[in-house]
Each structure stands twice: as structure tokens, then as C-alpha cells.
Image (cartoon, one colour):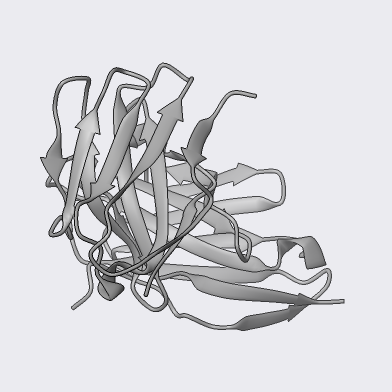
Length: 112
Length: 112
């Protein structure tokens, strides 16, 4: 089925460990996004990629890095995980934001 | 002041009633507005978009936009228990389409 695929769905990390969250879309969208969702905070933009080859910081980029590998794939890396990064992470894509986003199923990350 | 504000709820309505969900925003020149539905433990799903003042209807859903008063609302007619979810308002501000701002969501409970 067409859509946005995120892996893994669940992950537990120890403080200081690193990991990469993978995201791929098959809708030929230009723009891709990484959000985190925390209770009471709503969805907050971490990084986005307006088009292949470009990435920009969002509202909460500290502690994260991203790579737009090609038009389909946009990965999020935590270099040294901290308990404050415990959250649900969503990848999304859009042709432009004027058409709204399609979200992946999310990654539930716990840092202990 | 938050950029996009929603009452967190829960908003409880009986089955068959009209549910009214409201959202206010601070950026006066915002151009695009979206409603997403998020079931517990799931990812947000786009259900409505609206760009011009007035009403836009899609099935049981009606989005209403009043740019002068800076609010957007979502009406759900003939509410069903399956409509029980959190509804997120999203606004594209003047800063660019990559900087979509989400409200924290209103939890709707439809009582059978």
C-alpha cells in the first residue's frame, strides 16, 4: 500500500546509545518531515527536508541529525540518546504542506 | 500566546449529536488550515483542509474558517462512537509551508 513506512515501531535505548530511525515514502512527495509527539506538547517539528538534497532545522533539532538519502528516504539519527528524547516520533511527507501531510505509523522510543 | 490553541477536552457528546471542535491561531496571515484525526496509539490522519473563509463540507464533516476572527472549527454531524479520537488543528503560517504548527488537540468522546 502507498504511504509512509517507518522503522522500527518500538525501541528501548540506554542513555548514550545511538540509533537511526528510518522513513521511506512511495508517493513521490518532495517534502519530508520528522516530528516528535509528547503529552501536552503536541507535535513538534525536529527537522524537515523541502526537497531532495536539502534539510533544515525545525523547532526542536538539538540532539538529532537527519539525512535525506534520496527522494524516498529521510532518516533521523540520535547520536547520544538522553531520557529527554523519550517520545513518539513520526515521519511525514507531503507534496507541499498546502496539501497536508501523510504520516507514518510512528516509532515509540524509550531512553532509560 | 500559543500559535495554535485548542481546548484539550475531553469533549463528550452523545451518539447522533453534532460535535463542535474549535481552534484559534495567532498568525493573522496564515493561509492553509487542516484537521487531523488521531486515534489513541495511532498516527494522525488528514481529514479536512480549508483555505478560504466560509464552510467546506465533506460527508459528515464540515470545516469552518473565519480569518478575521482567526479561528477554524470542525463540525461532526451524526457523531458515532468511531469518531472518538483526538482532533488536531494545523496551521500553515506566513513563515513558510515547512513550518506547519499543530495544536495540542481536542479529545472527543462519543457516548453510545
